[in-house]
Structures are given as C-alpha cells and as structure tokens.
Amino acid sequence: MKPITWLGDTYKIVKEYPTNVRKEIGYSLDKLQRGLELFDWKPMTTVGQGVREIRVHQENEYRIFYVAKFEESIYVLHVFTKKTQHTSQKDIDLGKDRYKEVLKIRGH
Image 1 (cartoon, rainbow, N blue to C red):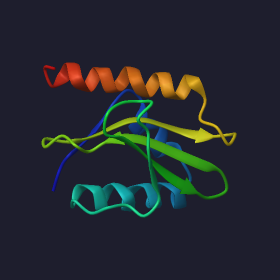
Image 2: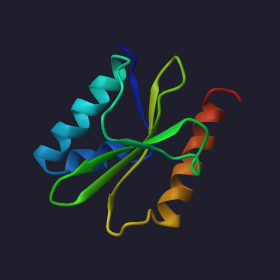
Image 3: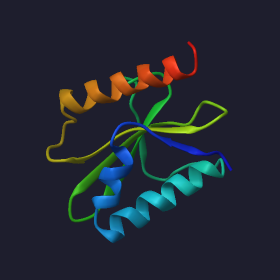
C-alpha cells in the first residue's frame, strides 16, 4: 500500500471533522492507497499537474486536494470546507504552494 504524506496542517484539520466525514475521507484515501479509482473526484489542474480533489458531500461540502501520481506516496496538499460553488483563490493558491513543496521534496 502506498503511504500518505500529509502536508501542512491537513491531518490536524481532518481529525477535527465530524466522524462521518472522517470515515468517508479515510475510505477514499484507503482506496487510493490500494491503487483503486475514486467515485467522486475532480481534476484540479489549476493547482498542479496530476492534482485531484476528493469531494465529500455531508452536512457541508468538504474537499481534499491530493496528488497520487508519484510512486513513493500520496500527498495530501490541502483540506477545507467549501462554502460556495466555486473554489476560492485562497484555497487554490495554498494547494499550489504545497504542490511546489512536494516537487521540492522530490528534488524536482
């Protein structure tokens, strides 16, 4: 199984989500670790090449930016609660910064 690397405060934020949301996120990440495709995701090319968004529909809309294309790990870039139909520029920018951090970690 591919390990998960949590960037910034992503793990801390997910741990504060309601139990049902954490379970759904955990299920999705487990599927990714096993190399399986997710049912509800969206490409986020505005964040970076190969970045995708997990979409969790519960009492709120929860989003997780991640990149799984690298062999060594799944990188969780950003997690947030979405308040509007459009993803805020602030969230996109934070995802971009963390994607650049991944590339730096990998030596690219």
